Length: 377
Image (cartoon, rainbow, N blue to C red; front, top):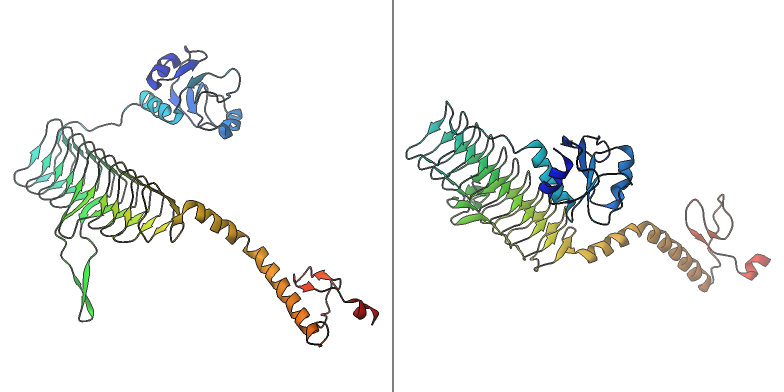
């Protein structure tokens, strides 16, 4: 594709030779003359010295080496994504139809142009919308609904009475509708609490590989439209996730918690049960949320605290070794002064390799300077 045509696809302003051919995308440090790369920050510019890309996508004002072909975009990352699609095409979709060795229950309903891969099993009263793709080796339980244009990748399990909206993407290994983790402790043992609710997932939701969403105990576990959830996450029973939330890998959200719209969570966040996280709040990676978070707050740490407070705590912790040394020196000085005030003389001097007054180089312990009368003796 000529660079001038790619500029139109990316909605970018061309600087340079628009007639050169771009065949693919590449990494900033290894791109060749046939490839396109992108720069999101000036700190990555030195990597361009290791490569000779055919063109670079960069924001206005970023100084690219002279002689380079540049596509200027206010959002280089988004423009690059458009270029990837233009140069590599859309993901391959299976042809419409039902493969061999598929098991379908009664009243199965499939919309036009949908595709079902081999060895899938469907329960009764399943309804698939238009242009749905279900890859091989999936289990779709009784009463499940999957909306138009959704994609369900291999080895996905959607259990009974759960629903997925339109344009959802469900990656391999996902389990939707497993039992919530609920038990009663009776007569010295745990007795299972029935989990008879369901899971409702909105439109344009993406579920990462090997993540799980448990069904509610008696009502609904829900994920709002536009939310994106990364691999290996756990959404427990009765949780309510709002719209357009982003939840990174290995995050676990305990039962009956509520995430309002536009919440962002880093990787490996843990959220306790019955917690409410306000609209637009951000939680840093590896944080432990043990109490409600107000809208718009930025939280970090375990237990999670306001972000600036967390940074102050971290700064203080890094000074602890130095502070411990100072405390030990002060203790030594106090003991010495107490001994003198009590008339017992100065603290007994220890034999070591550093007899001079002041902190000992080996131990760090303060050695007081002798008083004038002591020097005379």
